[in-house]
Image (tube, rainbow, N blue to C red; front, side):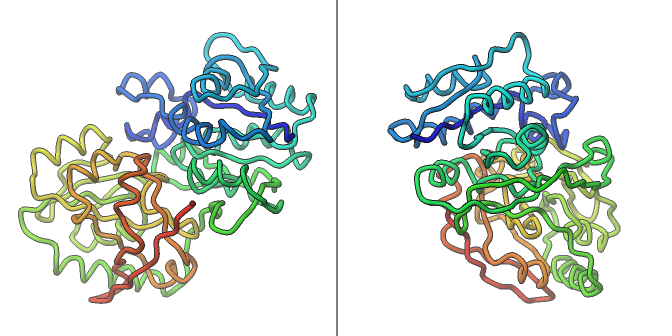
Length: 365
């Protein structure tokens, strides 16, 4: 029987839908803006799939850091080895992982984002494998399963141990539109094809700028008057805005119409309100480099509810040829498994001036 250390960061991902680009140090502000916890729900998807697995025994934390979710999902084989009081902190995460190691766990399963991954790895180092259930805002690290169902599939089946980068982003700089990543170390993770996400890459080769301009030139020709366009984060969508004389937020989600700004750095509620105000709305997104996620990483403001309101048929995906070469599969992790399935097996991606490619959407299970 495998012994799995399991913990949840209860506040992970709360900053995403309200446009905070991360939750570290901003939990109170996220709550003030109306953010709701999402980590419990993400963990529940994994736990429900593992609940009847007789080969797994969980060592966990009290309350919302683990035990509550295990109990609610019908997992009977678990024991609490770390008690915490009040609001959980990064120090609680580190102490819990230390308790797991003392109990001789075979793997640490955690639900959170890049900050949680960093805290877990700071204790485990390379002593035991770690695996993340993605619930944060950014998740640049390569220690996360593609989605909660993939995490369960990995633990239920055969896997090989592989190395993976633990990355983190300076959230204060990120909120100011500056992307500063740092490598915390190389962790050991359970691996299987198309189950673990890659570390995010930023492409800056010479042809990239020209490719983005060609995409922007084509979009400028086909963007319709009177239609609201929601632009996701990234340098490709930034080029689309710049082509029209608009300065968008590089790492935020913005809305434009008729060559002008409607809203900069919008949160989920604002986007839903805009979709009601402007019945003719389109969403333009670019997948994250190397990871290939269209939804679910760094753009949680464009939630499943927003996509459903706008209509899946009104979603436009753009990416440069180089990014597509480095991203063999695209993925969707909107938080709504039914919506994810509605994307089908492939999606059209605009990759140049009047050029599009149909790219396969990877399935975690």
